[in-house]
Length: 133
Image (cartoon, rainbow, N blue to C red; front, side, top):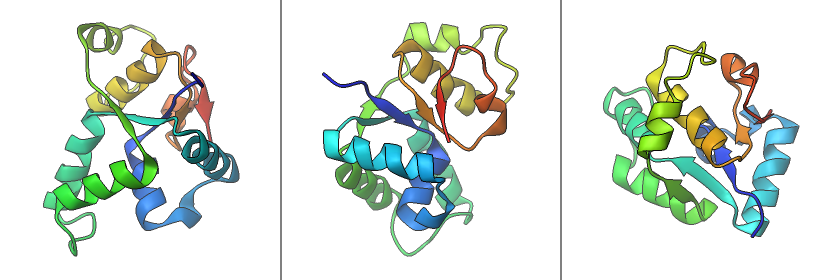
């Protein structure tokens, strides 16, 4: 089975709402992932999307449930849960990121030995993480 590619929350949003914000490398990785059906995300991304929609920081022309369902179907997303191993890994000292959701997303990628598509500068410099941007 080909390696999964993890999408950070903002990457899912960029792809859905403003694909021009994706870098060439991110767009290429997503296209490959679409072809191979190897795109994935952490389940915490759904919580972040729901919060953004509820706060009005993300589009309001569709329900949050429909928005997330559309993403899953369009990208053939595999959604990985937060496991005890991932939760524990997210607390390691090499994390310099204070955002708990970002720590969990990065820990998910590290745990599954999968690259993470992200524009997050702090995550791009995280030693055990392979980043596509």
